[in-house]
Length: 247
Length: 244
Image 1 (tube, chains in turn red, cyan):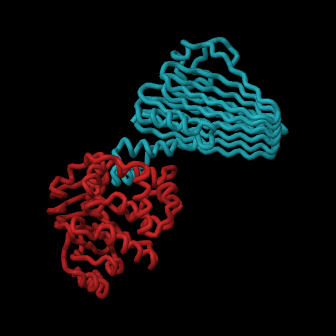
Image 2 (cartoon, one colour):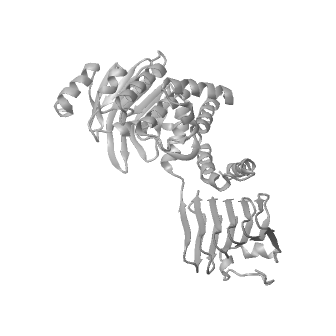
Image 3 (cartoon, chains in turn cyan, yellow):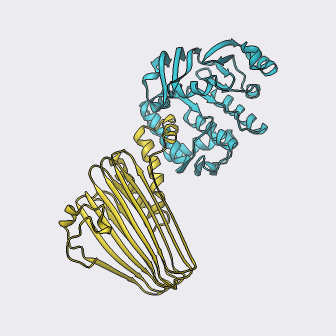
């Protein structure tokens, strides 16, 4: 589904990714772990197409297409979802309005019929329920006044509504209390644990992986993946620290 | 302005005007509106059809009267809305205005709100969106007369530049001769938040859709609570779509 080959990228002329390679197949859950500054968030932003993150070498293929050629909205229409570490507040724009437009823009991009207002609300209610989020919260301006945990749950509701093929979740677990962590973990499983979908979790900690069990764990350090293993690698990292494993 | 001579850009209130365009419609006849004590009035000024539009209103509010003025100044090649307001005791005036321009268009709102008696309130919300080489201006003077204690006057002025080639002018002014006065003004000129745009596009919105949504939110406050809020917003959004 996603093939990253020898990816190099810079932010403000500073090299961050230095030869990242990764293969993600349908049905798999991958976790990228690593110390601060390793390039974890940069990986997410480069794949999402954020301006200012410049690819200087390598290639990324997603669903058979050259991902790096595409604009952010085209990547979304192709089935890529980027869960933000810090979801952005957008005063004056309600979630419902924004998500309906986003869902229909994606459908249009794929040549599908738009969702009617009723169909959309039904879908939104179902996904909000999955994340135990009150529907009234989705009538409020995007992320404005939401707690850190509410923002992350709202990200998962968005993921549920947009129904992507690949979700790249950047530190979805940060800022979550124990209950919210479990709810988000279960939400990810319910929405994304399917044979035709895949997940790339970007995280510092092992705890989210208790709920969303990864098939592969990668250690990212210095802009490259330096080690790959199964779920046991995450436990080893948690016990021994990055320094010991990276060394 | 009672003078019949065509103003020049040396005149303070016309400093950023398109005086060549103004010449075509000069002199502008002042429209006088008086609201009787204790009653209320409202008006929508919608300029979206191109050409030159120049309006000059004088709104006089007697004691306890209220007036709700909404302006959509979006589409004339030159659009000037000048509003003078005189507030009696306890009167209340609201102006919510959106100005949208592109190309070489010039739009401007020039206000003078006189708090002539105690306890009157005024609130002005101006949102301006400028693309291309357009110019958008707000000149707003609030005068509080001697003895007009208990005055509460507010100006919120924000402009958004979609291109670096556009020009926004904003000059809120206060002239206060009373003691017990609340006068708040905020004024900002900015560009669309790049992070917000990326967030919206990462969810599948095209760049024009993402911009339109953010700008729609930006101008929404100007029409919030207006009797014709929905129609005004729709007219503004269709003009925004044309600009983007």
